[in-house]
Amino acid sequence: MRMRKKKWAEPELNSCPFYVPDPRAVRGKWNGQFPEAKPLHVELGCGKGVSTAQMAFDQRDVNFVAVDLISDVLGVAKRNIEKSYGESRADNILLCIHDVARVSQIFAPEDRVQRIYLSFPNPWNGRHRHQKRCLTHPRQLMQYREFLTDRGQIWFKTDNDALFDDSVTYLMQCGFRLIYLTRDLAASGFQPNYLSEHEIMYRSQGVKIKFLIAEKAALPVKTASLPEQTRASARPAPEMTTLCYIEKDGAYLMLHRVKKTDDPNAGKWLGVGGHFEHGESPEECLVREVREETGLTLTRFRHRGVITFCFEDNPTEYMHLFTADGFEGELTDCDEGVLKWVDKDKIDALPMWEGDRVFFRLINEGREAFFSLKLVYHADHLTKAILDGESVPLPAKRAPELHQNGSEPI
Ligand SMILES: C[S@@+](CC[C@H](N)C(=O)[O-])C[C@H]1O[C@@H](n2cnc3c(N)ncnc32)[C@H](O)[C@@H]1O
Image (cartoon, rainbow, N blue to C red; front, side, top):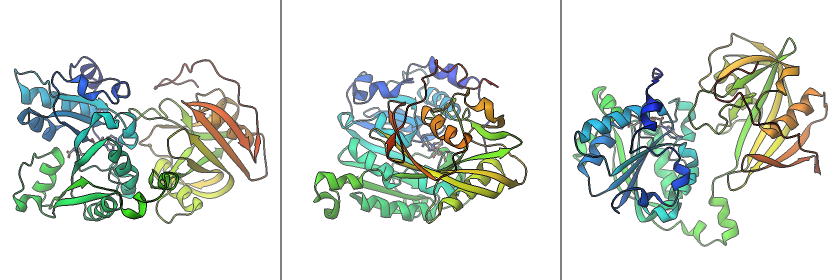
């Protein structure tokens, strides 16, 4: 169920003494943000902080950082923490907003995190088909390894059997040793166990909670004994995505990314599409993503090219670009932003990624041949564009975008 927008959440967080507005700025320096040095525990996807509030209050010998993607839920967490602490100062807990998919942007080995809590870490929209983007995926675990201490622990709870089983496999692949596991947490009598909002909900429905503790150990020999260069393959895998410009009456369907907090695309206009699921071809991914994001079923489309995105240390992304001019169904709301038909000649004026302008123009200017385009970014700026092996001029830089975050430029 989607939560109603809480207008008070962001202002309250911004004036809260235990909220960190720019967590990237304290990467590697979290311990210095607390009045006293203590072991550091981190909760990822803390939601409304129901368990966090009680746990941090009870465990005053530990410093906690609780992270979530959504300001509205974090605002509730802030209120729950204030309620737990009552008159006393919440000085061993800090809250911040960040996308855990990019958690290494906010924690470093110097933070010496001793424990990570992942409770019901469903993808942010909770759709089961997005399970592989879950916070126990190897892509995530390899990031956690970097800032967890040796023998640092992950405490993981879920209601979902398939997710639990997959997570056990992923943990072992990524050099974690299981030191505790139960498929019925309530019956196990394990203590201490702080009930989160979701644990309370699932228990009331009679769902058994799966729980494990995994400890950071050596990487499996197969991975650890390889030279550094080869070990890079154990780092986050490349990402495979699709993007589509759907055409109707001289306009393209564009998605204005204004719904998620800390969205790397926030404020930008994009085509529609998303990540591949296991075993999908580009066409299958395209049709599914378009249906999920727009409600439309594509009936005619064309594969136009492959774009290789290089973003410094982040995983390389291979994006299959499509155009479509046949579809059925009615446009629906999209979780990720606002959908709008935009006249083709107005699109270039929208806030877009610089690289998107390069391939958008190729499409819009009628390039017929399939192409391969490599786009190299440095700190959000396009530094190189290589089309079919040859460098091409970069689009002219634009004045800072005036229309980000919600306002309508068209
Ligand atoms: C199902 S709720 C669980 C909340 C809480 N841990 C509990 O057990 O009640 C999942 C939470 O994880 C957060 N979340 C999911 N993906 C995330 C991501 N990539 N980065 C940060 N938070 C995320 C969601 O916003 C949501 O609050």
